[in-house]
Image (cartoon, rainbow, N blue to C red; front, side):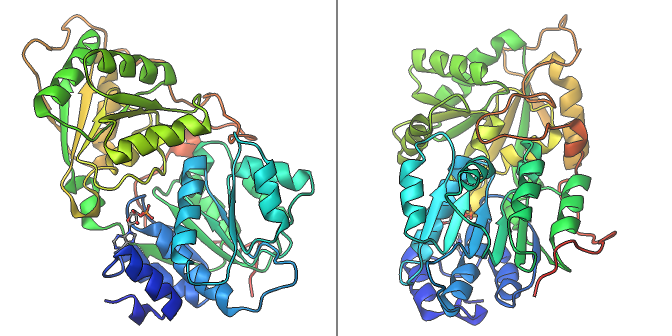
Amino acid sequence: MSFSSLGLSDALLKAISKKGYKSPSPIQAKAIPPILNRKDVLASAQTGTGKTAGFTLPILQILSQEQQLHNRPVRALVLTPTRELAAQVFESIKDYGEYLDLRSAVIFGGVNQKPQVNKLRKGVDILVATPGRLLDLHNQRLLSLAKVDILVLDEADRMLDMGFLRDIERIMSLMPKRRQNLMFSATFSKNIRKLANGILDNPIEVDATPENTTVDAIKQKVYRVAKVKKTGLIIKLISDGNWNQVLVFTRTKHGANRLCKKMNNAGISATAIHGNKSQGARTKALAGFKSGSVSVLVATDIAARGLDIPLLPHVINFELPNISEDYVHRIGRTGRAGASGEAISLVSADETSYLRDIEKLVGLKISVEIVQGFEPDPNASTEPIKQGRSGSRSRNKDQSSSRNSRSNREGKIKSSNSRGRRRNRNRRR
Ligand code: AMP
């Protein structure tokens, strides 16, 4: 299949070929035609599948073919859960839209609003935003959503998980009821289905997670280890293996900082990325990792979500997430774009029940190894750890409104059924 057979314009085809893409990814092949046909779409797709181009390309095409409105009001709105994802989507729009006369902007919290407002004043066709800053600027009457014709909810599951439900509902109320809605989510919990039922009108369901990003295609391994020996083990694994592009997950921000410090002391260049870091520090950390000057990126789940890090050979769970779906998100970062990858988890006694839940969710028993000198503590309690990301987790600036609850996350990895689709509140053209 070629991009031209999807009905994309020459200007877009030129931008695509400049990016070096040879053919559409499965999500692009399946999502682009219905979006161009102005259908609502519900897509199951993780980061790394090419989902961004899957919605960006057809939106650019639709907007470029429609008549420009006076003052250039926002006609397409892309909502993302994190600043990093917003910035990445914006970059994609700029790249793919290089040969089109469309304007785009990105707005997110944690940085001065003035440059964002100046850009909005000049008129913007496509706006990428995190919910908090979007509502903030709307409340200040610095932007209008009254002409939004296409809405994208990117990583909808994470938006719910981060407590954005009320913000999303409020944002819906600020837009025309008749519009095209596109929703992308890696997981499909009951709450995601409910949100989809409320927003989407008779959507086309697209499920195109490519083989190499499915859980079973990733080599998974568990190292049973005493809690106090985890740092030593991770340093040994990275040093012995001479690994230089490793994404490490910790459950807490402090844990990420501590681990980074110890790795740096051991001569491994590591940097942390989490919600307490300024936007500048997060961007710098990611750039260092991408350029190869930093070997290890230590991240919390929220900070890592949506990061565009192509070709990641190693993902290490320094601690297992207590939410099984997060494990799937984490390991989905390896084995991308056809590359082989390995996902390693360091598991201490108190994480035994998390491991059991994860194995149940992914439907396989993960092979276990023990490294001499880093054996598990036979006397340690198997009582689960009570810390890190949980229902009462604190919220950053972009995480306003409603509280998160365990039931928000009781999803399955994927579910393609369309049971219970109810009448929709918002009817489009
Ligand atoms: P995404 O899932 O949107 O974050 O995209 C993941 C990565 O795949 C990004 O680095 C994109 O530039 C890249 N990508 C997107 N579409 C294609 C394609 N058709 N062929 C090759 N790479 C692509």
